[in-house]
Length: 86
Figure 1 (cartoon, rainbow, N blue to C red):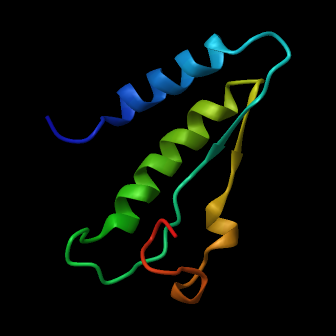
Figure 2: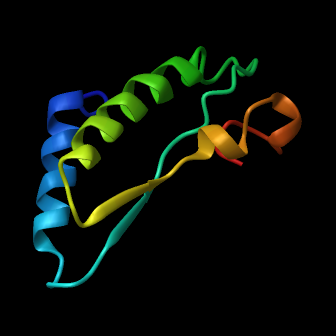
């Protein structure tokens, strides 16, 4: 079926935020956007960029959600271990 669409992803985030108990906060970890050479995942950083934008947009409207921004923590290949997720 392929990957999740941006719209469905945002719907899922809204649903999760709405499912939290009163007073709870949801912290979401986004994806690094560092270009790396991985033949198994070509241009993965571009997919991360698209989904990060969608996440930022939806979280802006949710008072009980925040993003831990990996783009600040991982800004070059030196900040990664074995792949874009580590």
